[in-house]
Length: 98
Image 1 (cartoon, helix red, strand yellow):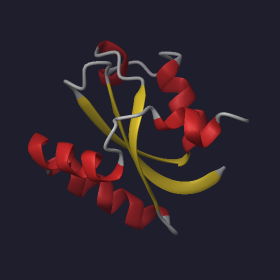
Image 2 (cartoon, helix red, strand yellow):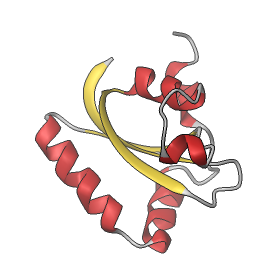
Image 3 (tube, rainbow, N blue to C red):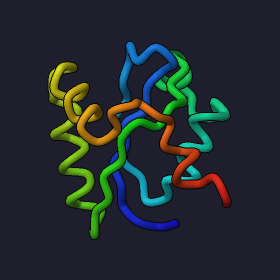
Image 4 (cartoon, one colour):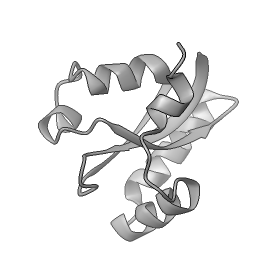
């Protein structure tokens, strides 16, 4: 699935967040889940997809990613709770049958 998207992943206890951007969400989240991306997400075991926002073009997605990265933790939590109140791992609902 090739479409610009920003995403937020977290750990099991929702204590750390990572905001990212990609044009292939399935591939990118699979990489996070398999701990293939070295750095922040691997170090903090961030494998749970809790928020996604789709875009028509990558420049707009990148601008939104930069905006969210500057947000306070409280604002990110509020955004996630509005979108995904049960904090489900959205990876399984988006890609369960693929």
